Length: 497
Ligand code: ABU
Image 1 (cartoon, helix red, strand yellow):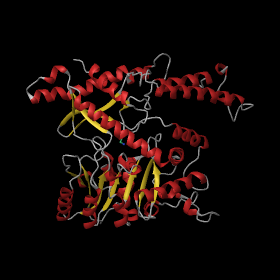
Image 2: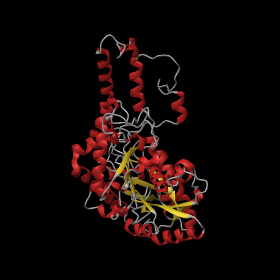
Image 3: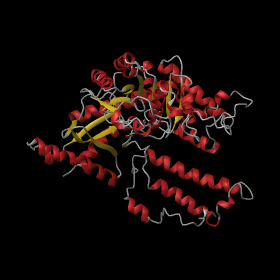
Image 4: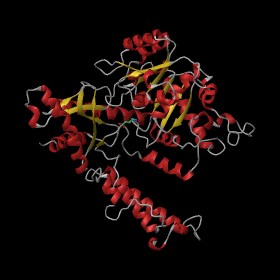
């Protein structure tokens, strides 16, 4: 009977809440079916259609907004179709992104959060969530090993990397906030050439300029070279500029390499430079005693980005900016809007944390992590990280012994496994230039076949002089050894000439 019903029959307009309950139960059924399919290896990861096909409409699924109010029946169909033509990122054979999986507890948390439908401006309107954020941030202080902490959940690692540059500049040039950049010396910032691109964007946003964002060479393991960093810092000083900020990456996006924080921090200390650790991807190793050594020295940093929506599987999005400099976020960003952050409220207004951020409205992301941590404990997170790394090592062993496959980088440090697949037709080409040129075309072709078939998804990219290769990322705890075997076999099947 949803055929003859509309949103006007739902709360708060309907005569009773019965229709609302029936409608939401139908929605819940749709979601439960989708969740089961997400974990079902017999189901495709995606039912691929090109953009123009989706825009033109498939089997009655239309993206048009024609201005008419549709029936609730149509709204339910829209929900089903939206999920049907999307990508099941929770599928055990989805290896495409750093964030994957469908964690049931944090999914439940997201439903709770959406139902609460509040905003993280103030304690006044989000008392529980604001305190949870404080609890989680303080817990991170112990995990990182700082004596002080401040932080904020934000819409993602890129925004957090921006926060870190803002704070680094605010610490040495607080007057820029009011007076602007005129009259201040030219700042210079540094990151490894394998750092995530979001580490550079703040230079463009904040008026520092991309030309003053210097790439540091990496060694054969993909680690930033501290000696090149020092050389480039000295060069920038000779040029009359002020080196003020370095990003070390814990888990590079493509290769999963961990910069050596201790050595980089020594350079930063020597030249009084802010050290940020972009641990968006690799920060999860802090949860494992076995792998924590990869971020040794993280406590010497000034700030850290960590995305629990990546390796520990919290549903998107859940990302933290953390700094050991208390009150700097507030001082850098506050605008003291007195309609929201009144100073004469009857409770402790230090919990009105919204004025520390560059947003106004802020989604509740903390609850997904908080509930997930409550449900799994430290041990659960530790197990997740260790299992994904173990599966990646299994894939490395498999690649080494399977003809036609070749690792791009030997012995990965994390759960990124980068490899080429050589189809039989190019294996025996002697001219390396021709062979390489052909190899660079293989991954995009196999990727297109993967997507058409919907059987697996793995990303690819070139890196420096290395032509297109696959980057398989394992961050989904639903993956098992058979899935890894299947992936290798499927690439062979899809890689026919
Ligand atoms: N924020 C970086 C995400 C990149 C990836 O999932 O591949």
